[in-house]
Image 1 (spheres, rainbow, N blue to C red):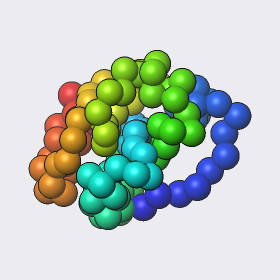
Image 2: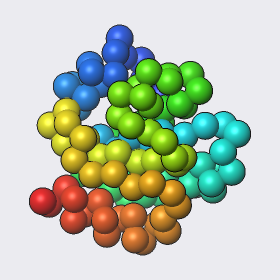
Image 3: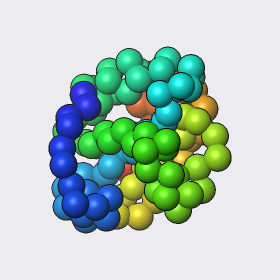
Length: 107
């Protein structure tokens, strides 16, 4: 369940978040990224009370991709308390992603 919101900066988004933020670093030309999109929608719906999902196009925001060392797409980074806590590179199936996120949030 992706929601479009405006923030003055990525840092504002992270500091204002009341729950962990899962950032999907993607590109519109990336085939695996397109395959991941519906999975993230489903995961977002299942975990809407536990995480917030944000999509960041690395072509539009290369400075963020560089800052967080994004070299492969898609890359998911889970931020807890404004800091990167976990990272997944490449495709992952919905059930495995949900389990991974449950474990990461609980840690």
